[in-house]
Image (cartoon, rainbow, N blue to C red; front, side):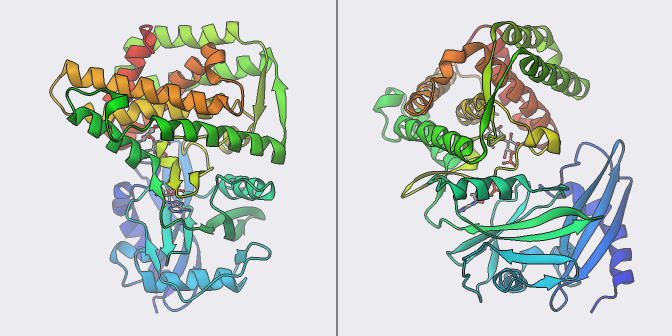
Length: 436
Ligand SMILES: Nc1ncnc2c1ncn2[C@@H]1O[C@H](COP(=O)(O)OP(=O)(O)O)[C@@H](O)[C@H]1O
Ligand SMILES: O=P(O)(O)O[C@H]1O[C@H](CO)[C@@H](O[C@H]2O[C@H](CO)[C@@H](O)[C@H](O)[C@H]2O)[C@H](O)[C@H]1O
């Protein structure tokens, strides 16, 4: 077995080169100045859990790795045999060093299942055990309570029908501050991501030159409406579990100041946004002047079509961590549920617009994309309004939230998928020039 000192040396040398290529690594915008392994915890066999500190100009962050000496690029999560023991430890409420594996009270887990990494790498690494469970390994360490786990537990406590059941967790601490390393949930083998369904529907429409969105086979509007209904139900369940309150003008001013601040930050790194600065600031200010009081509560925080799954029983919301770039305080703050609505409305726009990326200019295709977006955004709001107030009744605030999200997306695409930068930028161009 590899000795701890030898492992530390190897990681210090290899990680600065490996990390920037990994999707889950959140610091792609800055060079890495140093990588320091802080704690190694042997699990079973040659599997070792490592907490590393990554230093970059202006930030120091901690990430977790599961390594073994013969694993490709050190990452042991790619090996289904090794991953089996993580589930076994959760099932047994086991402890390794300061790492505690726990199942939720009353849950009995099946063991002996291999943990296959999910194909797509996102902000975290997820392992699927048989057809039963999914274990999310949180890559960037967040100190204190884990929002994803806590929101799932809260929603479960009020019998929410639109989430996957939380089944267990992996926890540790650092200087007595709790850290959640992983969350085990019920896996939905029949689930299809909303993003895949929506983009398929857009493609169907674009392939049919003569038909309109409501005449094409893969029309998504019925699903969009059910999704709006499900999101409103989850919002209502979050209020039932964790409460809500009314925010007055001061809180609204603070929220608007946050939008202006985010705009400042993104403008500094993405010059292409500059031409919309005045119009964006004016829209934010307009919202501040028009909005008096609003209800605030715990929300999803990063809702988009990639965060919802369609199962045979209906829509599920997943991944309640909030925006990857947000601070812990921002994620945990009570906020308007219209932020989630805005995130989803942006996503309908994304689903249609991303199919135009890299295509020669084609007015007909652009028109069809807009048609699809309008139809599905309206259907989503209709579904939401079956349960709660119609989001469109609060147009100023909704518009500000949408533009704020688009500014966030500009930063996200700039750092992760530069070829998609035109997607949020073209939406900002349209929205700031009076379009829907
Ligand atoms: N309970 C589940 N059942 C089926 N698939 C799931 C489930 N939870 C997540 N997934 C799949 O795993 C992917 C990643 O999950 P997510 O929680 O969004 O992780 P990340 O934080 O890495 O974005 C999702 O896009 C979805 O396809
Ligand atoms: O799912 P994550 O929590 O990792 O969210 C981040 O990545 C998303 C992309 O995977 C990003 O979402 C943007 O692209 C989506 C299509 O890929 C689109 O559905 C969303 O509307 C758009 O915001 C998300 O913003 C980011 O936080």
